[in-house]
Amino acid sequence: MGLLENTLIVYDSDHGCHSRTRGHEYKNTCQESSIRVPGFIRGPGVAGVGRRERSVMHNRTDELAEKQFGRVMAAWEFGEYPEGLWHDR
Image 1 (cartoon, one colour):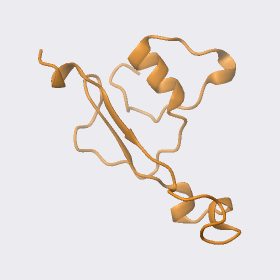
Image 2: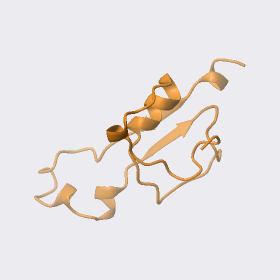
Image 3: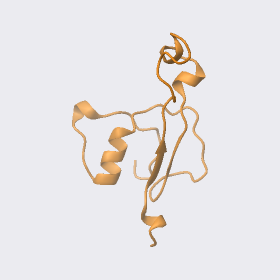
């Protein structure tokens, strides 16, 4: 297995600007630009090569800690996993 086949690549982002850039209500609404941000995960154990999920909302912090570093998160730290993202879930 080469380096690329043994590497988990995670690209994540946020809304790109602070709360006052586009007006008072910018990040405080349920509009598309406030709730959806681009990101991808590629690597061993990731399901659905080329799959696009538009409805996934979750906390990625616990996924990275568990998958990348083998750390089991404390109960108060858990976010939610999107159904079927990882093969072994």
